[in-house]
Amino acid sequence: MQAWHEISGQISAATDSFFEVKEAHSIGGGCINQAYCIADGKQRYFVKLNTSGNLAMFEAETAGLMEIHHSRTVRVPIPICSGQDAHATWLILEYLDINNGKCGKASDLGQQLAAMHRTTCNQFGWIRDNTIGKNPQINTISSDWVEFWRMHRLGSQLELAKNNGFNGKLQELGEQLLVNLEKLLPDTPPLPSLLHGDLWGGNYAYDKTGEPVLFDPAVYYGDRETDIAMTELFGGFSADFYSAYRCDYPLDSGYNIRKVVYNLYHVLNHLNLFGGGYYYQAQQMMSNLLAEIR
Image 1: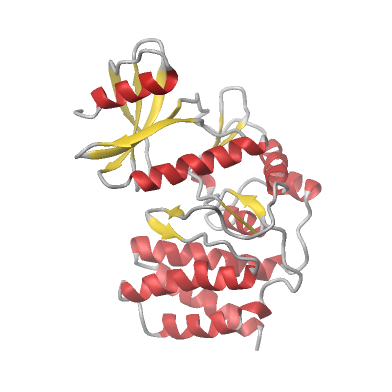
Image 2: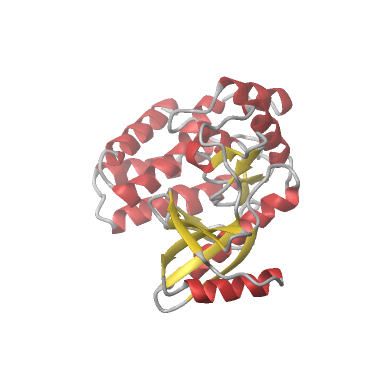
């Protein structure tokens, strides 16, 4: 590929050690980026590729990975460098040997995530916007959690859905929900915890030693329950994960209602990314939430 020469030079400069791509193997990526393992016979790196013009997305991911890394709680792949040319944008990461079968202790992941969530700041949001999938995620700093969730999570996704042609009952229910949101979220504001932000089963693994690894974050500071809620959205994590997390950092009463509010954001995002049945899933979730406050 044309970009390998420039990528080689960037890695050499970033690591202060000569590197030249001699092998490049396509490996399993997601629906947003292509993924490669590149090597020179001695050193390997993980490469995420996208079309040209997406450098800001990878710069935000780099910042998010380093935010988690600096918490000294859960391992993440360390970013090496990022760049772009006329044809592609790339992010170069530390290459980690990953267990294909997720062979590790789920309880370790639960304990480490609880520790990460104890990393807090004094306001909600983050120093920069990033992406959730390929859609924009607005992280404007706020001292009001309900307003943050209303404007920058549900409100922004509903507006995007409207622009994508998803109108009718979805927007009607969405408007009602936004007006009544404070009735579903905590009376006492949660602590602004460091969040992965996109914590489904495809965004964690274990390395060859069994140590948990998180990747592909959409970092911001918010209610820690948003991360836990998303772990339940697409099949759930293991019982040992939840037991270890709750032992170290118990969830407050009312979580079972709040998790629907928090997961609605991701379902709306999937609607905006993929369309299809997510329209009806989002509509049903909003109907159920509104029934809770009537």
